[in-house]
Length: 566
Image (cartoon, rainbow, N blue to C red; front, side, top):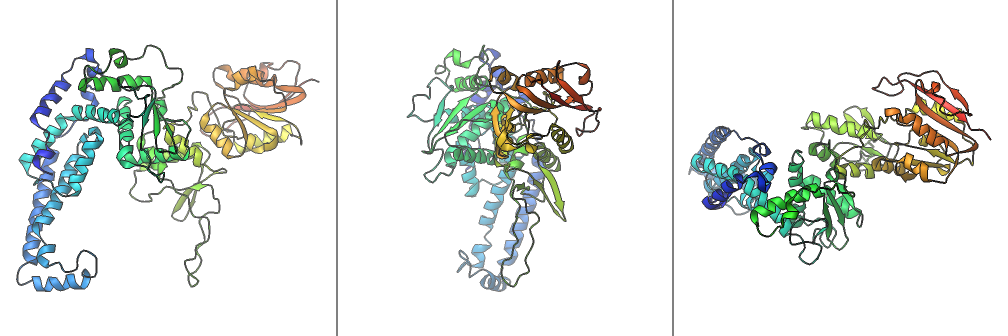
């Protein structure tokens, strides 16, 4: 890496200065304010320079000692005895192996990379610049890590972040397929196509997938999220390839992707993100992007819902690395004592990294697994999570969307096993009776109902995945809307409705309308609901108020079993 390569040029600095000074009428003041970039402490370089000088002195000292006429013959025997049989070392002399030039080149590369890692510049570099930087670091062509060069280089790189950011957006746009007419020349639009995202064997083409990762990184910045890692994008694109032909919603609705077996990927960007991307493109190509494509949409897009409160990418990265704990007895050979597996449940997951992990991030990732029905297990030094269904698709959906269902908004309280058993015992479903669980959640009640006789209705796509994985028959949709439209009627309806804003009574009334004459309804209702007379003419049996049925809440509930007149 020559000094000219590692530094941005003076002309780039002027462009960057101009970019920084654009006024708000072009949109850049709002999009890329000072708060958009992380502050950088200039003095952090001092410690780097000190360590570099110390290490370089050690290299020169060791090389001088080893290659001296007194020590070189002895060192040669170390090489001959320990390394000569290994590929790449045979026939090399002591002087070649302990060359100061080669060691210093490696040292320079390591410290230039460490210096860059101290800033947030890497987050803004476009894919092509990142690849060029990595190639030159890998080839150890960096200049000496001298103070004047380091400070000047980092200063220019930091000053050029806005230009890099614009280049990143431009690089994404330029690498859309030129063979598809849906890729509009006036900027990012609703439907875009990128070719050769997957290679002929179905694997990710990393030269191309880096641009999709760039797109996610830029959108993450717009949404105020932490920076994603390439690993999360890599895993997401593999999931998309495994579900070829299916639209997958990413990052809270900001982006959608559909993979095709021929190797292309179709992309759709939320309108609120597209106009921001086009506004940045307009900086590099002022006359190419029409004004209407650089303005915030006035009408909310019907097919796009943009979610907030997404999981941090660090947590999503933890989930993407989950592994399956061994369930079979292990015996490497007939002389070795068989090693019993820690679990016999095939539907299990454990975290890949058992040491050197961020405890706060791991705790959040564990909460995600608990929220989708995982049970934390521990034996000796092993910890893992067990499920009563295959959680693969559900965990993948969380990786894609970046979010969990907003349970608090709907006051969703998963039905405890004890409460569900009590209610189902009282309802006493008979063979052949048609059954319904409205707002089924993850199946706390449906799991105890006969699967072949039961229909579940659930609004959360993620919960639908859980129910499907458990083998339930599922209708995805809002129960209240579905109840008003369906002509189906059931012998038995069993429910744990949402409680907020009086919705429990409304859901109970809607469910009652789906019960056949002579049928029955079982429900878990908030305490005090027995005084509402919500089912006039029905024979209603209420339990006493119950406490402590929903972990972590003070909600008091009652069981209701009601019989509809013939």
